[in-house]
Image (tube, rainbow, N blue to C red; front, side):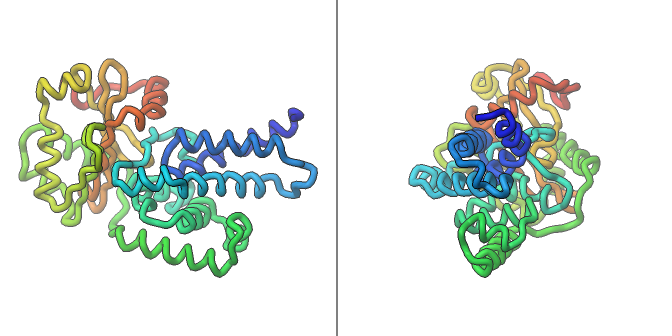
Length: 312
């Protein structure tokens, strides 16, 4: 392959990776899909490809759909043992963030909701909401009719909207303050204050410190508060499991405020929050080692600053 063809692919690699991540919810799988797309590009008769960007988007999207439809992926995801892989803000794989729709499409809350869609609905939703493709373009990418694309988009939006109660958008500084207050309440035993910081429809999802076979889900303010209090209570057993005393840092993960737990400079867990109208509307706890590798790599390249909690 000549250098011009390689350069042409590399110019679009970031966009393809961002698309694949939104479709698959896994950075590792997204990288594999992009590499497979490159191999297809390498083997293609490129002189017959009129619009390389469209061709590459079509190939990458359909490779992702093949993964979503595979028997193994269906088993893993329907078993309820899977959460999207968290990415530290600034990771290029998070992709475009110019519009509200683009920013929302990559949050853990929405990526988790997209698991309930069919692969086709998920693809149309991502292509339309995050990348602003027209229905004519989506139809060409997925080999469906424009009418089918419109129907998939309508069903996807309806299902996502049914699970999302939007309130006043929290700016980063306000959201951070809410999480700081939440963390203080969670670690101090102030259960009444903790309950007061949760919305009436709050949800919490956890992978059980990476040990549970199925995701742990909690609803209602009281149950979520009880789960959070237990989770943020330090014990010798938890420190042994984590590999030592933890430092907790505030950061942003997938565009939302998060608490990142670190032992000896290594990320061992993350809790991402969705803040709505000054309260916590949802939280997602991830501690499975295999889901934290890319976040940990990014963490090593940054100055973490002073932890909000040290020696936990």
